[in-house]
Structures are given as structure tokens and as C-alpha cells.
Image (tube, rainbow, N blue to C red; front, top):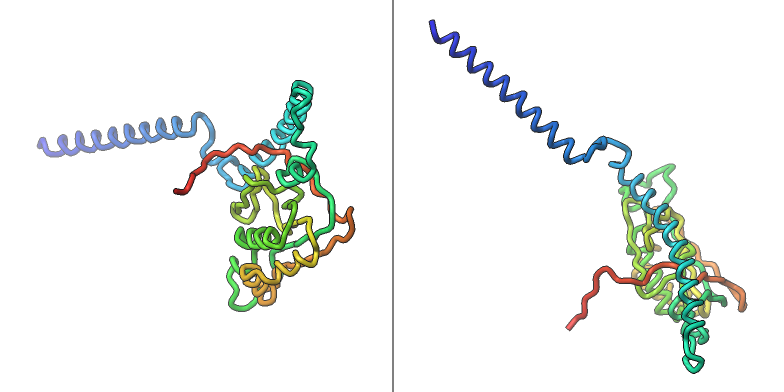
Length: 243
């Protein structure tokens, strides 16, 4: 007659173990979320990227103000015989520290219309990718571009183009297509460099096959394009010197 009692004790022990395990899981969840809802809106990658982009824009404006103050103080404190590097327009334009004007071209890349998907096309075939923007940038530099901007942000030596999902991330800010790349230089030479680029040719094959957006507009004259000065940070997080 002791067998039923033994089974009852076993069941009670099992129930107690389940409750103990549940309590441990709830405690772990609370510690992991640090008091926040694990399924809150912050778990959405798109919303998180947009929020960080907004904060980066505010910080970039503050950095720009501080940079102007530092430049003014540096000029005031510099000895009279020390040349101001920004007094050399070519140096200031090449570094991105000065705004640039002149003739050039603007290239626009865009996703394909989402109304009808062509037969045999995958979703990846219908969007602009990081390597497509990079191909245009590299071709324009090869064509003798003197200054460049992407989505009205000046491109400098530390600029990097990255894609997160279906948005472009440049210097902490996010952009949706269409993507505009503007470069100052000889419009004919820049167009020729785009036509000669094998990587750009691959993108243009997708333009013809799937309807991706592509246009090149020339800007003639000394006031053809106006590219803003760089207003971000040039600090490097990671760097490596190749042997």
C-alpha cells in the first residue's frame, strides 16, 4: 500500500521541480532584459537603426559646431608665420574640409519597381546592393573625381559604404533608395570611367533585365555642383598596416 504514496511524492517532487525551473527562467529573463520588455519595439532592427541614425545626426551637428569653434581658436592661437592648411583650397577640397564647387556628374541608383516581379528574378535581384554603390564610387575616383558626395554627405578617406537590410548606412546615418552619388570633375572623363567599369557594367545588366534605376546627369560650368564640407569624425576604430 506504500506504492501510491511513493508515486504521489514523486509527482509532488516533479511539480515542485517544474515550478523551480520556471522561477529560474523568469529570473533569467528579467536579468537579461534589465527590466525592459524583451518583445518591445527596440527589438526591431529597422526601428533601432532609425533611432541610432537620428542620434548620430544630432551628434554630427554638435560635432560640426565644435569643429568650427576649434578651428577658430586654432587660427587665433597659431603663430603668424604658421600657414593655415585651410588657406590652401586644393588641400581643403581634397581632404573634404572645404565645400567644393565645379562641373561634374550625379549618378542615381534605385531599386526596381515592386509592382511586378520579372520571371526568374529573386528579391535580391531587384534592389541596389552595397557593391553597386561602391562600383560607382570607385569608377568616379578612377575617372579623376576631385571631390565626391553620397546622399549629400561628403566622402573622405575614412568614409565607408555599408548596407543594413534595405538601407544604406554612411557615417552613422541611414538612407533609403534612390541613392545619389555626385562627383566634381570633367563630366566627359567621369562618364567614360563609368562606361569602362566592369563592376558598373554588371549593375547595368540588372538594370536592363530587371528594371533597376540608373541615370547619369552632367553638370556643366564652374557652379555646376556644390558639395558640402565634411562635418563628421575622421577617427578610426580599427586600422591595420599591411607588411
